[in-house]
Length: 562
Image (tube, rainbow, N blue to C red; front, side, top):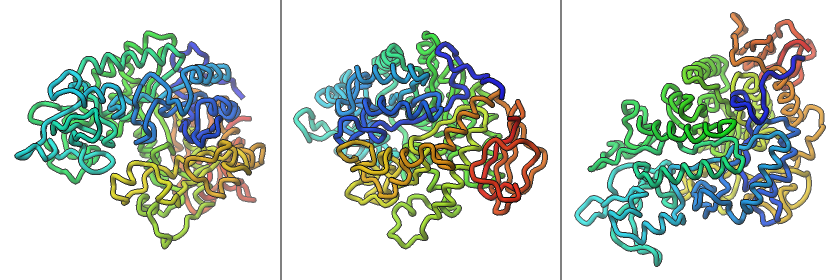
C-alpha cells in the first residue's frame, strides 16, 4: 500500500481538506461525574475511542453556559464552559489530550443569537428603546393601534412568529411593548450584526478559542447573520413559509434575513483573524442554501468550506446520488474548497433508520406514528447505512461522522412525550417531535444503568436494544459496524491521493462505480439484484459478497492493489 499523501501534522494548512471529523454532542457522549449529563471530562476519558476509530478531528457541539432551551445553542457566554459540563481547565485538558492523540479540535461558534440569559440581553431588557444596549439586538415597535402585532410576518425556523413582545415577566424587564427578533426559540434573541460592538466581540471569541489551541470552527446558521433592517421592515408576504422555505421564492441575496450578500463581508473579516495563526484555523459554514450560493461561503478568503446537505437528503437511488456527488464536487471546486459529506448529525434522523423507510416517507409523520405505521426493516436500514458510509468515505473531500453512527445506532423514535427536550415539540404545538431521537446518550457497555454512559443514568432514556449496539459488544467483533468503520478509516488514510474521481463509462443499472486517482475503486450496488464486480483485489465490503463472488444489493465494495 502507498503511504498517506495527506499531511495531518500540526503545521499543515490543508489538513482539513480530506480529513474525517467526528461530531460529539457533549451532553450525550460520556458522563464522568454521574449527573446524567455528558461532560468534558467524559469526552476526555473516551478520546481513545476516536483515536482507535481512526478519525482525524473532534468536532465539539456547543459546551457553553446555556439554559438548554435549544440543546445548548442558546449561548449565555461564548467564552466559557457550562459548569454542568466542566471548566475552562477541563476544556484545556481535553484539547491537550486530543492533540496528544493526533486529533484536531473543531468547536461550534453560534453567532446569530445569544441566550436570553446573556448579560447583553439582560441589560437590553433593563434599558429603554433606542438605547445602545438594545441596538446589540433587533428590537422594533409592533404594528397595530397599540403595537400589539408583530413588526413583520417573519416566521421562526421552529414554528410560530419570529418576534416576541417584551413583557414584565421578571424583575429585570420593563413592559415597554417593543418586540425582539428570534429566528429560533424566544430564548434565543437575534444579534444585530450591523452593530460594531457585536462584530468586535466575536473577533475576540475567535481569538479566545484559537489561543486555547482550537484548530477550527463550525459556524452555526452561517447564512443568517446579515439582515435587512431598513425601516420599515418588509414582510415576506408568505407567513406560512419559514425563512428557509421562502429562499427559493426570492432572487438570490435579497431575502430579508437569510443568505444576504452582505454576510460575506463578515467572513472576509473573520478570515484575516483565522489566517493570523499557524497553521491557519479552518472553518466550515452551516449554510442551508442552494449549491451555487453555498460555494460563496467556502471561498478561501471567507470560511474555506461549507456543509453539503444534498448528499444527506438524497434518496437511496443511484442516479440521484451520482448527480448529487457530481454537482457537489463541482460546487466545491468552483470555490477552491474541498467537498464535504455527511449522513447524520444532531439535527436529523439517523441514517440507519432513515434509509430503512420506504421512499417518500414523511419523517415527521413516522416519528409521530401511533404504532399503526409498518415497522422499520432495521436490517435493511443498517445494510444500506453501511454501504452509504463506505461510499461517502471513498469520495474526495472531508467526511463528517456523527457520534454513534459507527455503532449503527438507529433513531430512538419512541421517546415518550414526557421525556422530550427539543423546543420544536412545544413550538409546533406537539405536531413535531423534533430531534431528541438522534441525541440519546451513547451505549458504551452492554450492562449498567446507562450502558456505560455514566453512573447516574442518562438525560434521555435509552432503549434496551442499545445493549447490542454498545462499543463493548462490537469491539473486535468480526463483521460489526464498529470494526467496519475502523477498517475503512485505516484503509482510507492509506489510499488517499488527490481530490478527483472518475465515473466508470458503463455500469449496471442501480450501480455507482467510481475510481480515485491512484486506482482505488468504489462500487456501490443500490439495485435489488446482485451484480458482477469489475476486476481487482477486494479490499473491503460493507456486507459479505454472495457465494459466487457477486456484490449483493445495498452493498459497497472497495477494490485496489493490496
